[in-house]
Image (cartoon, rainbow, N blue to C red; front, side, top):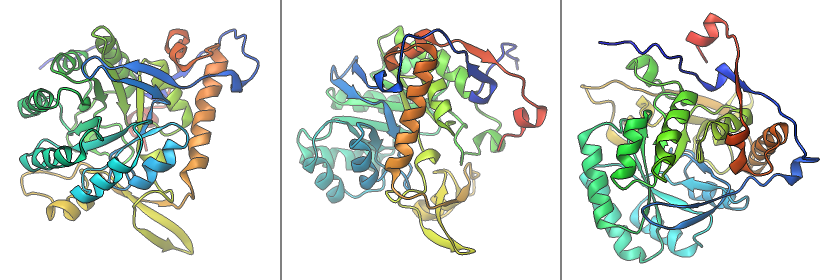
Length: 346
C-alpha cells in the first residue's frame, strides 16, 4: 500500500484565470479542430465534442442532430447489424460517427459481419470498457488493430499517463479518459476506485501528445464551463452523456410525474441497464451506476448552442482565437471548497 501525496483536482476545484485579449466578439473564435491520427492517418475536422455511447444518448437521431453543428456521436452497441449498415452506408463521413463495441467474442463477431457488409463506410470505432487496465482489453486492442489497420480507434477508459502511453503504442488513436466522474456512475462510491477528472486529463494529455496521440475526456462535465476546463487542461475531444440526455433525440423512456414529462437516464453499469441487456446483475458483481429522471428538454440543438457559446466565451476571456490555443493560454486557479462539496458531490 502507498499513498500519493500530490494534489489531484476535479473540475469544481478550479477556475480559469482571465487574461488580456484582443478579441472583440465571441463570433471571432474558431472552436473547430483539425487532427491527423497517428495509426489510421485519417484527417479529422470538426468540433471535437462527442455524444456518449450510452443507449439513451448514443442514438442515430442524436448523431444526425449533432452533425448539423459539426459535432460527433458514438453510437451505443445495442443496435442490430441491419440498422447499423443502413445508417453508415447512407451518410457521409464528416463529422465522424463512432461504431461502439465491447471486448467479448460476440462483440467482435458482430463488428466483422458489419464491416464485411459495410465496405468502406465505417472509419471510426470506439472500444468501451469500464476498466481499461486489464490484459483482456489490451489483447483485444492488438487483435482489432491488426485486423483493421485503417480504422481510427478510440478506446478506454483509463486515467493515468503510463496506461495512456501503452494504449497509443498498442494502436489506439484516441484514449478515452475517465473512471467514475459521470453523473450516473457510482464506481467511486461502490468500488472506491477513480481519479479526479481534471488531473486525469492533464496527465493523460501530456502522455498522449508526446506520442502524437489524442485523448477524449469522458465524464464529469455538468456545464459548458466544465468543457472549457477540459479543453484548457489539454483534452482533444470531450464526450458528453448527462448534458445531452433528456432531449428529443434520446431513447430514454418517457413518464409523467406530477404533470411534468420526464425521461429516464441511467448508467450503463446500473441495475436498470444490466436487467435490460443481461437479465440482471450477476451474483459476483455490484451495480456501479444509477438511474434518474430528467425533465424532457426538447430538441438538443438549443443545448448544443449553449455549450458551444460557453466554450467560445471561455476562449475570449483568455484571448484564444482558436480552440487549439485554449490549453496554451489556460491558467487554473484553485478555489476553496467546503468539505461537504469536496467529499459528497451530487
